[in-house]
Length: 391
Image (cartoon, rainbow, N blue to C red; front, side):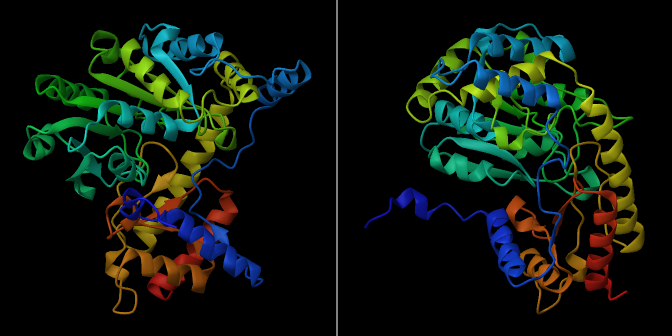
């Protein structure tokens, strides 16, 4: 059997590799705690589950329009009006199988072979692979902890060429949790328009931003310049719906039509019942966010104190999401010379699963998720600290 050449260039998922090793140790009877998981530990709100049950009871189990049922598309448009004052129509939205399919659809619709895509590094693990599958070229824009892993216009301009077509921004960031301010986003958007660079703004974590920071979005600028920006959102994090697989885009109507053509030949509509649940989420109470944000701030502060003051590691304090991305290079040894081998060592010796920074483009760091119970988090960090510092 011959497998296509394009897949030979795609690296296996580092997160899946960590999970496989963790499952192997669990099968041996080891107690394993995962700080690698990218999902909240809260349950999906009851009113969302009730909407799904009602959809089943009413037999809402048939095909729907490829881009989603009209009332859900209108609800997505209404979301950006409610939170950011951006006016849009349902025709400016598409509902996909999680934010991941939205991103894939966008890149397939926007990129021609050889086009360059600027990706600030560290980055979410799937961006480069998606660019490769679209036959584009990833151009990584390095950042440092001193800049809170955020790019500036000067950073972007240094790597812009006449082949640059797209910039992917992610705020709050996975893996760092760091956020751009609205002013920073506006400056980058002005630069991008000046140089005809299309922005894909990945705002999947936009509701998980912690005081004194405030949520920032390019959706208002999208309203003024819909031909140059697309917004990616999802309910996975804000409504604890990771397994429901529902994401969406806000984009120019013509770009939405192009994405519909792609989705129509791949998955067609997303799960019909999920769409009714998503409609209930967007239209109903958002109270779940209050409890989640309080818990995440408490866990962030505890984990940050242990990592920075206990271990002496460098780590920007995140303003959003539920990740910390400390620099742990100082703990590497000849036997564990990089983030992947260090994660393996921590998993084997401490029973804690983490994701190596190399998966995100920065081998000096390791990603920690604090989307777990407080006591579990503290215990896991204590175990990791003993591996790193011997204390």
